[in-house]
Structures are given as structure tokens and as C-alpha cells.
Image (cartoon, rainbow, N blue to C red; front, side, top):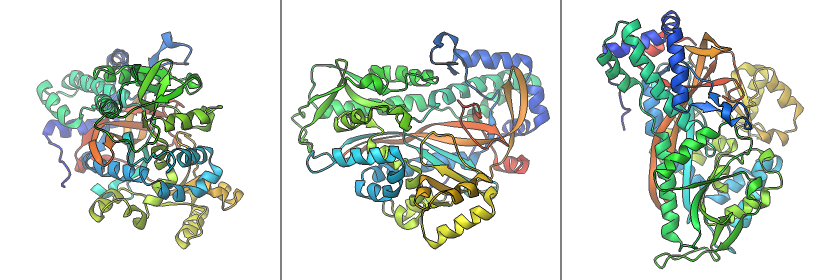
Length: 528
């Protein structure tokens, strides 16, 4: 399938050159534009709490004032590959024996992996009759990529960084910031760059693609909710979508906008932390007359008098989230409520799984040759440093000798702590071979740098930035029937060129917007 091509006009080429020119960008970011950007971001709800206790003092999320150029072919390729990635991850989720073998060493040293593997063994077995292949499955994913200057200006210049199976954040903020940037460029380019407003609007319709991630995720929730209601007879309780989130959550408004989008599908959300769910209980469920249940004792998840049809986890990826809550997590997995992610799906998102899927023989267990070739075109080189294979030993020695060419990634999702440079040989030399199963060793990506305008302590700062592109996707299946499988939106996050660690809420990165740029202009103007 050919990659979609950008509709290129002279105005689009002119805007692309402007956004890649630091001097022109500085001239465009006037005090008036900054004022508009902040006010419009608040108007669209691109805000967070300074602390969870100060909900009346919400402030703008760290963001860029104008979009960042991204090579258009790479963006469209990432979107095109989305359904293949979803099929891959769903098949991994449904193969528990493969997951258990793949994560055996990781589970011995990583608490999250260990506990989730235990839950899978307890819940999915011949005694209960539960099998993930028979479940209603809802995946709300974000697949993250970076461009790599080492691969050159080609479609193969994109490298997958990770695929997030849970708590894929900033879907709503990225969507709303796109429209803020669209307005700013439409308003200021005709005045400051002498471009016609009609031509600017037409160029932006091609170069600033609308993200519909919020609506797409809400639609997928609705499909999962309908599948649950079609499978199980009503208990007589009010039915809700359960959002599981931290009590101390600064990014609550990103969740709330999704909650409102789900309401447009007739869904009402109940918001609880894991600690607030300790009174949850399981009650018997009966299948609809037209459904033959494989589960021996189907159970409904009941929370404060409500029946949860869908459970959407925005927390539960750090061990600290589970203070005395692991029995509850097992109880939730035992229930027929649709989990996003389920325990198998959360395990499928572990970095060890991503590393194993980089091995051709493992990938071909889940995808046919053509799909495997397509998705693997974006894979970087990854190794399990605890392995004794010849290829791994050579990679570990290369990382010791030239640590600047590598990155060491821990298994824990959302930790924000990657290891670079001289930290790599220090860690490799201070752990036993078994303890190194905590990490994945990945060849370092060298992303292109583009100028970026941000606010720092109230002042406009121009910096050389690198960006990470995320593609949001939704997948809903019931047994062997796929109900939904598509890309629904995107997100760009950027950080200063010299900043190793990511993370918007730890202050290292900003929410950004991709400006799709013709390949010849992008690769000619960017810096490595």
C-alpha cells in the first residue's frame, strides 16, 4: 500500500521554510501571538493542575507556541502501519504461554511483571474457563516514533521507540493544541509573512492534520460497552465506565475531556483510585440467551452500587500505585468488565516484549511475512543484556566501549529514567547477568533538530529541539471478530536537543504539534 503523499503548494513550502528558520520564527512569536496562544490554550482546556490539591489554579500545560516540522512521508507511514501494529499486539495479548515464556526472567526482578503474570495464571485457566482470546478486548494505544538522521531522508528514517498499551496520555491536549496552532498561523502568517489568508488556510488543511483521538477513543469505549451489554444480562444496577486514576493526578483534565467525549456516546464515567476501590465486589452475571459463555462463573464488577462495563486504567503502571491493591487488581481481572488494558495487554506492552518482537522468528509467530516486513521496517536494534547470545554479547561490549551510541531502558512503564553515556557501562558492570534483565539495550536514535519556540519563566525562548511522534490507535475485538482497528489521532512531544530524559510533567518536554513538511525541504534544512 503506497504511503499517502502531502498536497504541496507554494504557500506550504513557504511556511515550512519559515518554521525551519530560527530568525523568522523569532519574528513571528510576537507578544500578541504569545498572549493569544496562552488564552486559547486555556479556552481549549490544554491545562493541568499545579498540584492535585489546587484545582482552581489550573495552568497551561508546557507547550510550544508554534508547530514543529516533521517529514510528511514518515508521518503518513506511521499512520498507515497502525492497523498492522494493533493486530500484532492483540495477537501477543491472546498468547499467554508465549508471554509467560517471554517475561519469565523479567518477572523474577520486576514487581509489575511478576504480579501481572501471577494474575494471568490465577484468572485465565481451565478452572475459570476464562481465555483472553474469548474476551471482549479494548486497546487504546499510542505508538511512539522518532526520525533518525543516521537512516537518511527516506521512509525508512523512522524508528519505533515504544508502543504504549496503557495510560496513553495527552490525546486530548495534542488534539486541542493543533487547533490553537492552526488559528495562530492563520491569523499571523498573512500579516507577518505576506501570505494570503485563503492560501494559508488551504496549506494548513494539508500540513496540520486534525487529530480526532478523543472522539476515536470515546467511540472505541462505546463499542466495548455495547459488546459487554450484548453479551451479559443486566444486573439492574446503573452501568458506568470506570476510570482508574491516581488521587494525586495533575493531568486529570486530559482524562476529563475524554470522559465528556464518552458521554456523547451515552456513557457515564465513575472515577476512582485503586485505593478507593477496595470496597469493590463481584456479583454473578448471566449470559444473554444468544450468547454461550465459556466462563464457568461470569462475574460483574460492582463499585459503590454501579456495575462497571469498561475499566479504563490511567494508573497502575508503577509498583507505588499498588499499595495493598494487588488482590483488588486480580479481582478486577476476574470480572467480565472490559479492561483497558487487561493484564495480558499490559504485559504485552513491556519493553522486553518489544525487544523480542525485533527478532524475526518471534515476529513471524504473530504476523504473516508481508505485515512483519512492514512493521519491522521501523524497528531499531534492541537487545536483552541478560542474554548470552553472541549478538547480545557483542552489543553489550559495544555499549561499554561506545556508550554514547546506546540507551539503556528500564522495564517499568512511565519511569522517565533512561540511562545514557557513562551511566551505561556503570550499570552494565554493577549488575549480575540475571539482574540485567531489568533493562533493554537499544541503539541510540539521532533525531533531526528543528527550531522551537517555548515559554520559559514568562519569556519566549527559541531552542534547538528534537521531537517524538505518537500515533493514537483504537482496537476492539470480541473473540475472533474485530470491531474496530484504526489510527484516530496523533501527538508530538518535543524537548531541547541536549535533554536526554523525556516527560512533560517532569519539565523536560513540551506538548507540540506536527507540521507536515515536504521531504526535500525538511531533510535539507534540519540539523543532526
